[in-house]
Image (cartoon, rainbow, N blue to C red; front, side, top):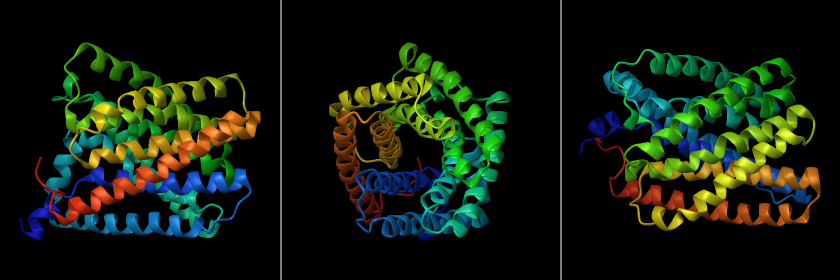
Length: 318
């Protein structure tokens, strides 16, 4: 396939890679803080996350310029539509990653993500409300992505001093989480199974309560009953997804495999925070184990993605 044709099929879903890499960077930042270590990983992981985002953004902007109809088609697609906020979430996460490394750069990157996130949230919500072609079969856990983006905002936003703004986005995120959780479970339990290509998105169930827990404990100034509830929900979904591994490993590699990365990074960070708040040593053991698994997972996903690119299995028509 010619390069121009491949560019036309450059998928917006690919920005989930940046979310995963940013999650890994934040998990290692948290681990080094909790364990009082300085392994020199902050700059390399942050640089990798930023670099990959810039490369993907250049390709997608080029696609927008040369193939605007292809981007419009994605914006109208019932599944791909939900992945557009992965762009804004990536910016918010990059701003969060850079918070303690390059604070002067972190704030404008974070603000760019917040503004874009709100615009995309309104667009996605409007598309859901005014749709003419969505069906129950189109519902899948990727629909959580617009909601997750909102609860990511306060993690750095509260540190920047934007208290009211942080609570505003947190409230939107939790509201959408509750509503969409009901819709997604209705789809899973009472309708046809999720197609194999989208099965990895089941891991996204972990993200809203895990990220919500991280944001809430920061804004609330510590752990309370609601914080315990959100961490418990995130931990349950993590255990549930772990029981599905035998099914997942039989699937051929798709970019949707990156859906495993950010949710698992989120619950890893949340578990480190649980140790900080409770001093229960089992949380520390669990967090360290999760961090090892997360690092191996990201290495595997990166390898699989590079191999897919080399063999021309990315940027193909659906």
